[in-house]
Length: 269
Image (cartoon, rainbow, N blue to C red):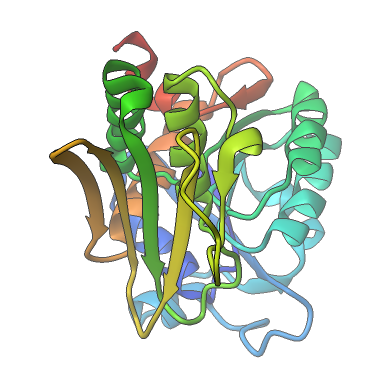
């Protein structure tokens, strides 16, 4: 059995991941931790999540539990994630990272750190979203520069980063499809007298409202017609399910950073 350590174990995603780990035949929920000051520290994780004790006590910080598991699943916050990755590198512990908001510098450091451990890192762990990633790049390549590309993403009002990591990745892949870079053509805000839309622009707009789990639509708009590719998340379970699939897959892999394309075999498509 692969022993799993859950970061942010008392949070919404941490609890959903715990359910998915418990249901997976190859995984065991072995350790849990929270940030300093969390009222969940000292509680039994099983009692919190399942309503009955499982002997896994939520401890303070990763260092307190890093020797209790084989793989760390982290959906917390980008600044915390990098600290966890440094600890994982020191202890040669595998990681699954679904945290969004990682910067280019963060990702570069993660690639260096992952010389000491295997890691699956993706802005979205959903199977369907990763299929969407493939479809967006292929659609952009087929339609070419005659079609305007716009992305609209919507999430709950507690989400801290904008645009979402998924929306940024969709933009990057769409840009690759038309042989450009999002860093050169991305437009993340429009306000006032902005003039005509430049043909090469890829716009990304964000909505934050109530309890929306996550929605992403990519528009390919041409003369007289358009294609819309949309993914709507009905719950967080599909993120958690993808994460535990990655946790089972990563064990025994060579050190380095992998994507969900690797986990799902989508690089062959």
